[in-house]
Length: 253
Image (cartoon, rainbow, N blue to C red; front, side):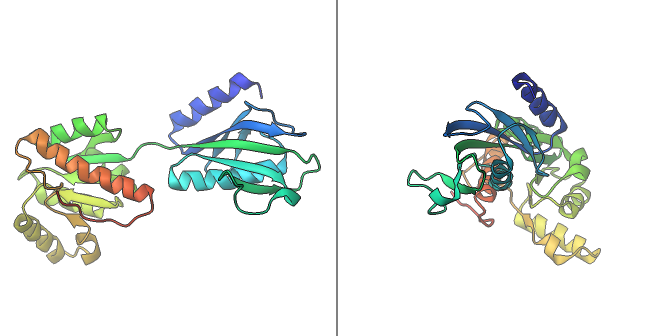
């Protein structure tokens, strides 16, 4: 594949919205079939589009790409002859993989993951809901209204900011979605009344316990934009904790 073609393939993958990694050869030593600057796209299914080297390099790249997509963090790996690998990483900290290829070469490869940013679904059309969607878009979220709840995934976030306009229906839809985090702009008393109503209607207790209300962290927020910032700060904390593999935790300020 010609070098310029790989960028076309990367563009196609981005347009599809499916997660993938870009693998770039940084350095080679001794005989290797791939040279510095070579690039390939690695799909979540393990397909390698482009040329990086032989089977030993490809196996290492697939493994590293899977790890990078899981953590969301880029990484550098080194593929080297088996007899030269003495640990999981070299003294410079680079993760190492054994190669049984007869060429005996060493390859350093940068693995960069790409995936769509999480979606922040905000129910409501009031000032707080509007402000939250505006701030969320600036923070890199795919900010949408409640109509996108049917498309929600586990990595997405949902905020119910209906404030008296269809609260119960919106909360029911939010809690029935697979989104890991659901919060609501409401007092604890109001949230308790609504969750009790949903429980009486048959909603599973485990779903109800996912609700965080009031939404946001306590920064003494007063106007809609300040409240939106407090909610977004909490959502960002959840997003970053998920990227580090941490459990959900409450924050106070």
